[in-house]
Amino acid sequence: QVQLVESGGATVQTGGSLRLSCVASGDTNCISSTSWYRQAPGKERTLVTGITSGGSTVYTDSVKGRFTVSSDNAKNTVYLQMNSLRPEDTAVYYCSVIYPCGDPDILWGQGTQVTVSS
Image 1 (cartoon, rainbow, N blue to C red):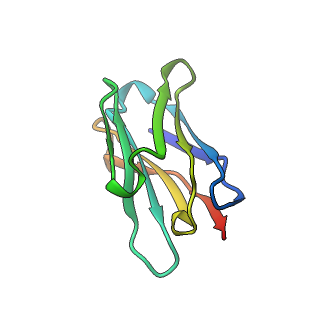
Image 2: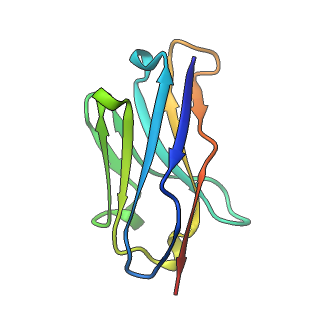
């Protein structure tokens, strides 16, 4: 199995920056991709960005040019660098991995709160 722990959430002002971290432990060799999702109050959880084990990335349109996902395989950590933050980025951010070796094959962290004040 794999365990995920997110950190780095905070309250920042509009235009500020944050870096979120997702540290994986356990059977990390079987992780095929890692994604960041977010869920604002009263809204559905949506994909923000993802990175495969090969380094391919995808971003939702609203964060392109502002957010960057990266990974440090030696540390089993995926980062989400968030710049030029906006109030609409306020949400709980969740790390999720595709874990083909297990059942369930999609695993989630506990989430970290990001609040952007105007």
